Image (cartoon, rainbow, N blue to C red; front, top):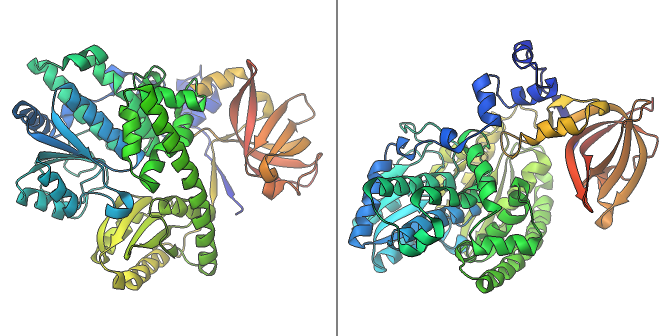
Length: 582
């Protein structure tokens, strides 16, 4: 689809005057990300673990939760960590498990099977945990929407601590303690933590409480981590993976956690992660590696098999075990890619008649519920329209939804919750299960009407948000040094996107399988400012249209290209506008 380019308003003069030593384009990038005050900018560029990672006991229920956990450890009651099956949930489970093990807890973990059990607590899993002797359940990355299931926990004589980061439901569960910064009456100052971020705060709380009370770590773990204070840092490898994977805003405390987490990942003590990096040829890990190589493999386990494979890799204690699990994850991930493309094609064929609707809905028989969220994401990306993909899987309608900035999809689910057995999610992503199959048509009609009414006057054509216009002569190594300080990139701190006008194509080459990509040599003005560029995925659109000698406006990222011990800057083209030759 043709994209509308929106260039950010020029940075205010007051910011330019306050920071005369910074290039105007860098101040423009800061302003675009909402940083207009000296303290905010200094924290963004110089985030520090001691200053910018908050005290875990600022959570209203943290003291209560930590004391209860150590009571269970002292009494050798059985604790069960109940996690989620995505990368955020699996890393959350591993974080809490690592700390429980360090203090000699009697514990186990339970991650539901996505296709059989679905998301969150369910009565069968609760009964299973009770039958296995559980006294205390700790949820990670889930539980906040399970008020009825929490009642079942109480009925069976167990207690439950909920750690979650999803939005507050209409009815809050009556848990022993709840850690969720999204609650209206929560006292924690940063609400955008991922599930693993909240699990990490619980881990921090336990480690600091143990240090204060003189509670000793197990000898094996003391030797491995050194001390409770050191363990706080060593856990950040898991926090970085889960935080980046869950696409929460990489600003504030999240930025600090990921920044230090990437440092830890480069020297991680986890055999499974070290072996994974080795197999993938990753030598200097960054957030892009997590988002596009590591997280998809961890997620794949819970999508098509069981997340225990990914959890096992994170907790592996030998190279042999790690290699076996990595091979399994790679095979599952390959199957996941094939299945996603297959269902996406079927869904696209199905929604061909819905193009005028403000919500796209595709329904399939026995579509894998593990990948329908990915398919919904691809539909929303392709058409910039809220979308639902629903599967009649083993006689039960389960679905995933994705949305854009114009439509809060989890709020929409709340408005039709009378049709649902379970639901949850964020403003732009949700999962749900219908309470009965005969409610499907009413559910669809209600959501379609809601979306059509709410978005009837909204332009849903895709938008490319451009940070600033640059001249080719402004692109240099000094600019790159400033851009590096914005890393790690992610939600709310995306890779800077620039545009340049009246650029001449000197050379054009189609590359990649089926000529999907373009390699371009670009020049601006009658000068020597010439830049190599790569346009991923644009070959099928522009390959037969562009010719050497054409003039274009170009939107791009600036990248560092490394090969054979050489480094050079190049442009990664995201979109083009063909101009009348000038």
